[in-house]
Length: 265
Image 1 (cartoon, rainbow, N blue to C red):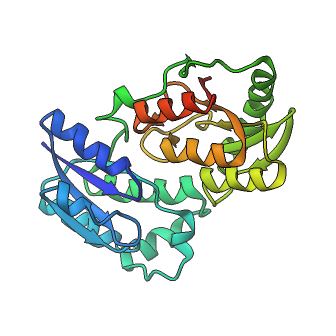
Image 2 (image 1 turned 180 degrees about the vertical axis):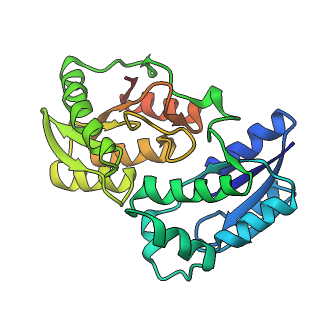
Image 3 (image 1 turned 90 degrees about the vertical axis):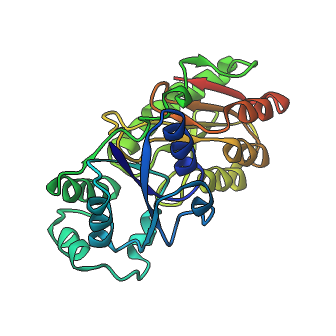
């Protein structure tokens, strides 16, 4: 069986390529011109570059390769949909029929179009089960009582914004909400929080209550910790079993060096 990979930005697509190779699986990769790192050509044998609005071209490519199961990995920034990219006829029809255009609706629409052609969108962590965050303390330092209080408070707020599909991250200080993620992404949210109230910040990143593991799975990595250090954040809470940790050893090592606690909630 040949799997399809819809590759967005960041490291996620590269980890899927590596994971698939370890399991002896073959990938046909649809790389998004506006998002995917050009290095994907160096690590994969079968790549087709498509514009963010070229849904028909992507589906035709997958069908030509005999793909029946596809994985979506790597962020495609929500704002890209509204950036002036010219959609093809198939994308236009899909957008026209959507009741709303938030992240879930947009990606769900793509999933439906794939399914109509016999291509099933599957769990994006299919080849990466070992990269999911475990429950409990992940770093040497456990969260302090104050940080645990921030996590408890933050989880309630973060679950609500995730349920509304507004974002996945909230930054808390002394049980007060400092910043909430919208379209800008986790790192930008943390930076904004640091500008507002630098120091003693707790970052809470959650999966949606009914998280669809096919897309928009929460991801953290070394850049997350680097951004936290710059913002003066001391603790990171992630949803256990539903958050991918990239470069796990390097991330934990950097957190430990800077006395940052990482906790799987």
